[in-house]
Image (cartoon, rainbow, N blue to C red):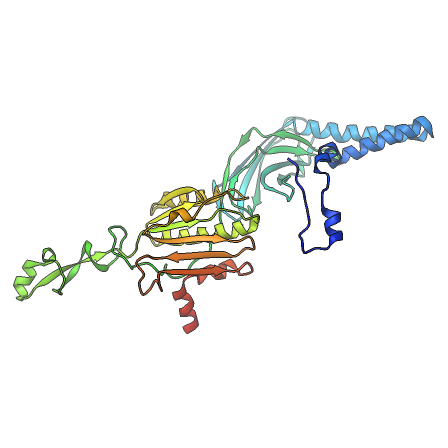
Length: 401
């Protein structure tokens, strides 16, 4: 597939003229020049032409260039085939920007050292989508079987490897890179980066529910204590034994739940900006993690995928795995179809990097601050600081202090 690279519109016309690919259809005819060996082959052909029509020195140049090409291509080809490599992470999941250790096992089957081995295509790619080396070794001793422990820091969520990793070598001249697919690979899941959120979601505690835990007065749940009868109490909640002892009506008080069921919808459209989607997913992961720690029953829509997160380690992992599965370039989804009578949190964004958190509570309430509230995180705001004081009660407390 042809890719057209163009400069942003705010740059000058000369910059756009120099950076725009006007003939993407012709790229496949010159891709061989990406490898330096292509230029050596071109130089060899020119040297042969010089030797034929101008001067014998051209034959000397052609022979020298041919020897360099043969050596620079033969040794890498041999190196990737006489070695056997495996790569596996010490843990199967890690968060973004958190270092993790990977074990590279190498076996050299010949009595000659092998230089310049590398494994590429496991983690990162450059801006053009080309795989970058994940692990590289300077030298592998002859007849050696060894394990090398290396530190890597994944920078973007996902399930890795996204493509089949390859063992590569371009030693000694770097004019050509030999590649061979790896046979043994263990995957690594990179979860979105999490930021701590202080306080609790403002709509917690507004509606009685049969789910959740807490000590707020209600008509269901565990026994908390007794109190005097109040107008409107049901007769079936009267504690007749305690009432007989005190000569007044006594009602059994039970602990009602502290939270309502939440519907969390996450917009997975990239809007043409990969970094904007990454910021939105990190905010969503932080919000869902905070709700999970608070043991709030949550039904989440990650794009078009629905999740019901349980209050255990498996539920947390299921939630983070779903966020890690969001494609780097996003996927289309519809959020307007998910309007319900439940309290909801909708996390969306724009191509400029703004993140919007819309909190809707049909039941309203004092702590909810109204039926709908919108929180915006600007494109230049620090996510750690913005999510720390995400809820209004925490921001107000900081101002009062």
